[in-house]
Image 1: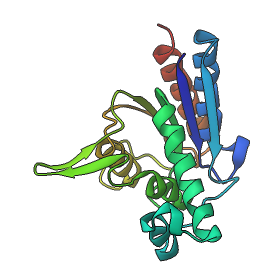
Image 2: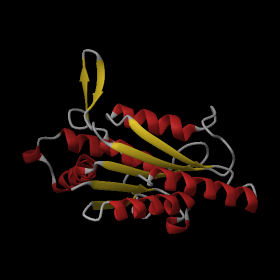
Image 3: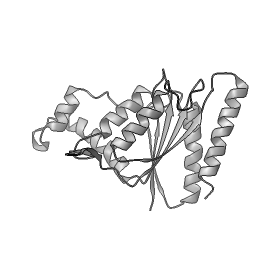
Image 4: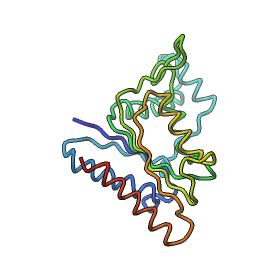
Length: 201
């Protein structure tokens, strides 16, 4: 049974274009995989605590020596990692805020990047351990960026996923959302056409 993990990060919730497009893709996926399991996590609606020294200390403390507060921090981190480990397909809604991803989505990446669990260091450099997964990233932006240098979303997300071992990544863009009604409508229609093409098989 296939499992899909959907990560939404728009501060506008279900009204956010990245969430709307990701939801549309997931609906198509669910129709094609009626027995599939879907795990949904909205890191904007339920923000994760920013990674801090207390969390790192909790992760480094042996299980039997952790305080209740440390155990709670580790449980959250373990849950997030378990979700992505179980997933065959990853769907990320990634709106651009000030040239990069939302801080809430950055926190999610911080929690799932754990040495010896989702990646490891080798004599040849870091090696991702979350292999064999397919990722779809719905990148929405107010202006037009494509994959230009000012686009801090594509580079970062692609690099982080590759670092974790996820190299089969498809980006679906909706650019120019704040440039007027016509560009916005065209951008959303273009993204929806991309979704239809990706889910046609």
